[in-house]
Length: 173
Ligand SMILES: [Zn+2]
Image (cartoon, rainbow, N blue to C red):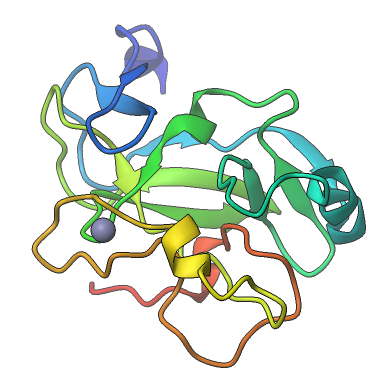
């Protein structure tokens, strides 16, 4: 921490070719680096649902991140650059949970100028709109792009679509 904390910032937010804004590496970032904490107001699932129930179904611009069964982080309130990191199907980052906090970590070495991305694996919901994969369409350009920011279809979850924590994800190493 000592030395690296004084170094130039690792990332910046700017327009992204993938989607709206994105977060880009300002220097080389080593695999395993915790790049940023996903910050925002911590609310209950009920509060998160109430907050965004008026949004149109076509709007995927919410910044909700599920921590666990009790807590959701709303990056739209008091959030940081973490909320601008885009989804990617072949990402260079992943989210992880530690002490109920969410961190975005590099899963490989990231070169200066690269856009950061992690797999949102957004949960499916029993009452999702039929075109939910369209609403959350992915155009990340990866060869194995699955065309959707949602987790692959399986048993639907009970809650509104939002990013799920990296906890449940499999690791390759
Ligand atoms: Zn994709």
